[in-house]
Image (cartoon, rainbow, N blue to C red; front, side, top):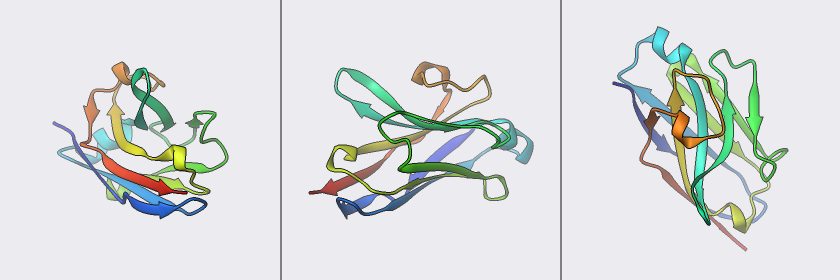
Length: 126
C-alpha cells in the first residue's frame, strides 16, 4: 500500500517561494517509477482543484492556468519523492496542498487518483 506524506508548507510573504515535497513509502522502486503524480488544493465549489502533474517518466508536466509559469513540479525517483517549487506566490495560493498518485493514466481529476497524502498548509500573506 502506497502512503504519501507532504512537507514543506508554511507562512510566506507574497512574492516569496516555498518548496513542497511528498515522499512515498510502502512502494517498491518499480512501483514508484510507474506512478503518475500530482498536486491538488481545495477550491470554492470543488472538492479539490488540480494544480500540477508529472507523468511516470518525468517527461511530461502539466499545470493549471492559475499556476503556470510560477510553479514547477519535479520527481526524484531515487528518493521516492515529488516536489512542487512554488515561486512568485500570491495570497490566493493560500490553501492546503495535497499530493496524489495513481498507477492509472494521470489526469486533472481527483477521482482518477488512488493514493493521497494528508496535506500541508501554505499561507501567503499580503
